[in-house]
Image 1 (cartoon, rainbow over the protein chains, first blue to last red):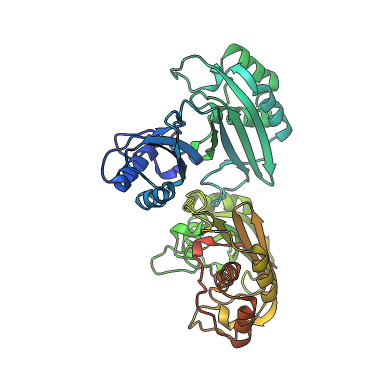
Image 2 (image 1 turned 180 degrees about the horizontal axis):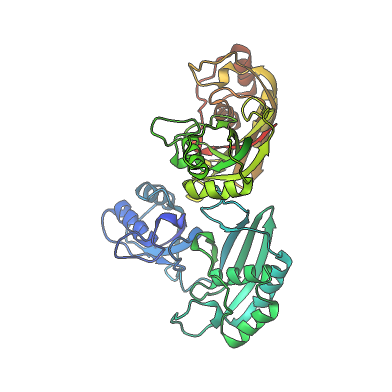
Length: 244
Length: 244
């Protein structure tokens, strides 16, 4: 039968989602813990998306197949005992065989988290990126609205990325401010490599007046990124939700 | 001149606030970083309160004296360069010589943070303690109100603690629920050893119906703790604010 897993992780200590030769990817740890729980047989899991080194997930989704009859909740607890403290299976459920964690996803929500402070804040640093002064958040939201919809996001991917086309659809980008914390929440159906981190970097550049909204329009039109836009640090990025 | 420091830390990697022979207390790290910044001379700092191993602080306060003329903001940045990533000075200011971080404090606010989930949540585990099911939060607040005021808190300190009397005044205890997170926020003028963690444990025991409100009243009256009340884990405790 096919099992759908929901997995939470603090990405700090791991080599991203996708299996690595050193065995320290989140996929590696979950596969080993499942094999331990299910009795030694190797297990292959399929994740909704390949989060990068240092990226976190509140609710990554993956599926795997097993011949064993398992109680999903006992599987959660058992697998969690075998996982390092930074990774946990937060839910497991039996799904129909047609369920596919990767290809069945209809939308994914990522959050890029920032905090504004002239000095660093150790209690925020694990999952937020520091800004030294408050940017213009209204301008950031205007830029976010401009990027929403179906566009050629060639200027918003890592240089040299190899993908089948660069047109993607973003359903919504919301810039939420809570005191000195800023969250950029991006919902879309598929993303290019580093796309959310570059979108966040673009919003910050606009918020500081380093580039204008018409510069951003020119990026959409030309497929070329303006200089001065950072790909923000991976630690600020969290995969929040995957819908099917 | 006397300098007031505001210090934030993630207590996970350190041996509490108070200086230790192994040099891994927060006080040790800050004193070494200050000595580095000020040119090698040993510095002694005085903190508002001695947080335990594993306890965090959003805004611990300390003071120290120096003969050097220092720019407070440059001191923050310089000292932070010499501190481990889990500790940072978030503010420094020149104060009058009569200011005393410990004896001048008029109130301190601590927060005990919980999350409710049948499975562990790695992104919450660093600073929150897990509960498996939702307790009765209204009962927890009723218990909190009962503990507010001036009482003999002998039943709410670590057994064998050596203190001058056990009467303390709690100004307010607020039980705040946000989704599956519960924060117990305690404001008072002084606390016994482990008092906030035992108060949080008492509230949880009441919230689960393990003890009744009249059991709690009996604890206040007798000075003896009921069995089954846990001193909750230090990682859930954060020193939020110190007022003068």
